[in-house]
Image 1 (cartoon, rainbow, N blue to C red):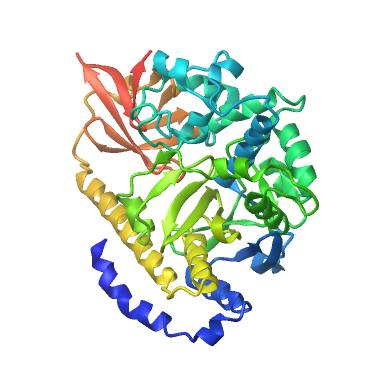
Image 2 (image 1 turned 180 degrees about the horizontal axis):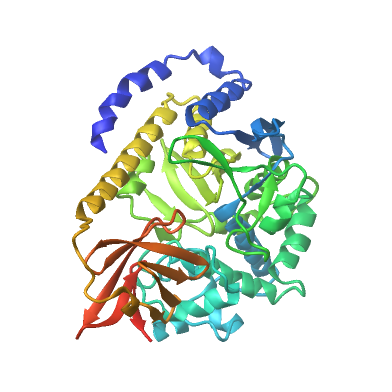
Length: 492
């Protein structure tokens, strides 16, 4: 990524020339937001800024619906996606505070049927391990994302996933573990995780514009429309992610008004009128537990940090010499970012309705630099260059694959011999269907036509699967299995 760094210097110097008198005006936040929205072509944004126990700024920008010209307001509802995990962490913290469980309780004490692939890890794994992503189990997001099975089934399948790293010695972001935490919380309320969160978190904090399923959030009259950038570069509306059931790993939907209440609680442990949790419990949620290697893309996204760690639903790092606690969220058509500076009692939330944009992170850094009067950097330019470099790498990978496409190459066997069912103990059944001169891959909720590349290699072109390869293994002129999503499926 060094190729773009030098090119940024001129932009950064120019950006830094803004006067300090201008930066003393909090209303300049408007210009920062509008500049970022224009740069990233984001339809709508909401920004909330908290200091101590006060919401000092909450405002909507742009449009929640471009077709209907409806504005984003402080009441517009957005999905929080992975930032929902902080609600699950807070629910666990309340149960710890009440003595109903402990951070280091073994998971099997509360979920006797919980299993990891390694029996020793199953015996030892604790609530703290699940909260801090240190089980050694890789991400495997497709075991929940767009999956047609129930959350309990996603949790059951963990037992069939060999560890990707060492238990308590490696970091792998793992959402299904938070779904398991939701099952632990469910044992303490007759309406399960959602009931507990509503009664013990939302109600005491006065969060009346927060919803615990995507279906409920989308139905709100002020809900934002989801948008994605098309292959042609245009901004197009897409459906909200469909999920009827509450999900402890990622189904909270919220307005900027309520996000201010949530950040105030995370900073002070209080609602507007009373204490909810003691600060030592809040501090435990924000304490580093698992080292995140600051290398590769993590290093690129955090150029002003020297350490990253995962706490309990929060990432903890240094930023230009101060402690920063943050987390991002991404789901179909939306990206959000929450940032806190605990020592300064500052909280910042950014909600956007454009898929996979880096604007929330760029704007978060811009606002922090502005509020703390740090020498400013043009983070829009920096992350814009990162995105362009990443897109270039993806284009080059696609071009390499196209060069491998051989129209004269034939599969080892007739297409109808590929048809059948293939099994993986965690990923389940992958069905290959032959129809005339084409094959189709049916797995989970996906049905994807396969494009022949060469030999026994096919491309499953699908936006949500990121266009994976399907590679069949042949032995004795028979199809023995296939490799798909980096998993080996055996033919039934």
